[in-house]
Image (cartoon, rainbow, N blue to C red; front, side, top):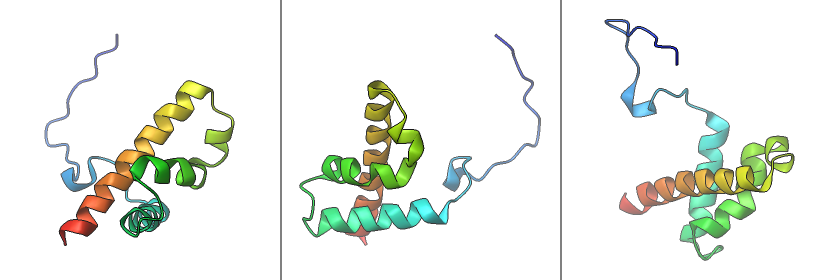
Length: 89
């Protein structure tokens, strides 16, 4: 295992958890969360199954079944996080 040195003074934005902000994904999060709130889907899991193709595109279509399950779970978490943010405001 390669050990990399920690650079003193390295910074990252904790609000973004180290990931760059993506407008397209944020818009999809918002659209999917609003669909769950409006009862278009029974829950975040159903919305994730519907929207996962728009999140991942070709990477989802070509993935093996295990990778598809993981991607659906990741999208479900994004949708649920956004839904909770919308409901709490």
